[in-house]
Image (cartoon, rainbow, N blue to C red; front, side, top):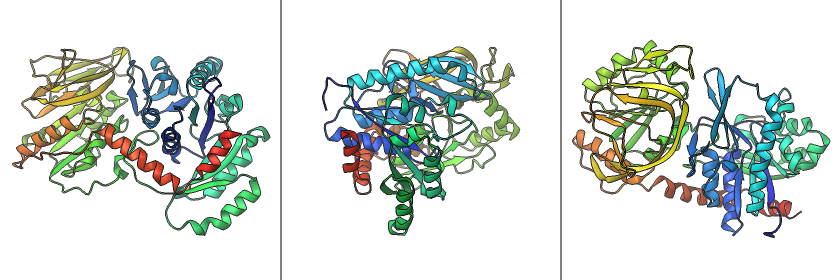
Length: 495
C-alpha cells in the first residue's frame, strides 16, 4: 500500500451485539499485521463498562485495546473516540479518552454534529498514519428507531465509503433471517457497500448450511465469505467478559476463587488471568450466594458502587462476609469493591445515586467520597509483602478513599507512592485494575493463599496476560484462516 495515500478501510458490522465482531475484527487485523501491513483498529462509538487506560492516561474500551495489541500498536484515544458507560439511569460520555459529560439515555441526538466531527478527525488521523484501518460497528446497523442518530454503522460507512462485512451469529438461531433481514432494511446505497456475509459460532457440520447459503446469496447477491465454528479463546470479547462461560482451565481446584457477580460489575477482565493457573478454580458468586469453600473472595469493580452496595445490604452480605472472614477466608476489593469494604461511600455530587451516603461492609476503616474528577493512570509497582512480586495495572475511578486507621499499603508504586491497604493479611483493598495480568504478582499472591491453606507453593506459574493474549491472537488467525476467505478480503481491499 502507498504510504502517501490514505489507508484502506475494512468495516466489520454485526446483526446484533455480541455476534463476535470484536474478535473477528481483532483476528483480521492480526492477519494483515503479520503480513507486514501497518494496521490500526477503530470503533467510532462503543458502549461498554470494560475499559482500560492508554499510556497517555486516556480511557478506551478494552476490546479496542485488544485490537491495538493485535496490530502491534500502542493504543490511544483515536481508536475509540466516543465511549459510552452506563451509570445508573444515565450515560457517562467519554470523548477522546476523557469524561465529557453525563447525560440521560438516547439524548445525544442534538450533539450528533459535534460527535461526528470528533469521530471524523480521529478516523482520518489513523488513515493518514496506517495502511489499513479495521473498523468495528456497534450493535445492529438497522435499529430503525435509532438510525438517524447512527454514528458507528452504515452512517459511518456511507460517510467514508467503507466496504462492509456483516456478521451473523448462528448460535442464537435464525442466522439466515438475521442476515437477510438486515440486508433488506439497508437502503440501495448501503447495499452497495455490503461486500460479504460471515456466519459465526457454528456448532456442528458446515455442510448442512449449504442450501441456506446458496439461497441467501441468490436473494441478496452478496457472497458468504466464511462459516466460522465456535472457538474458545482467552481474549476480551465484546462489552464485558462473561466469566460464567469462560474457557475452562481444567483446574485441579486446590485454590478456589469467587468473584462477586454484581449487577453493575465492570472490568471483569481483571480476573481472567486467573484461568491461566492450573491450581485455581474460578467461580462467579451471586450476592446471595454461598461463600463456603472459597479461599479468596473478590469484590470487583462496579460502575455504580452505591446501588450495588445497597443490594448487598439487602442480602445481609455484611454479616455473611464477616462470618466468612471468621472462618479463615480472605477478601480482595478492587476499585469499587475496595470502596465497598469501608465504613461508607459518600456521593455529595450524586454522580451515581440520589442517596448522599451508603454504609459500607465495615471490613476496613476507610471512607470514600465520589468526586467529579476521574482518575485515569497506569501504575507499576511491587507487592509490599514481597518486593519480588511485580504488578502492572491501571486506575479508573471517581472515588477518593481515606484511611482512618494506619494500614500497611498493598503495593509500593514505582513513583514512590503507597497504594491500597492491607488489614492483617486478611482484607486487601486496591484501585489497581489488571493486577493479575503480570504473572509474577499473580503467582506470588496465589502462593500466599496456598501457604494459608497448608499447601506447598507452585514455583512456576502461567505466562503474563500480554504474552498469553499474543499467543491467543496468533491462534485466532490460524483458526480463521481455515474458515474465512482471506483472499476475498484482500480482493475487496484492492478495489
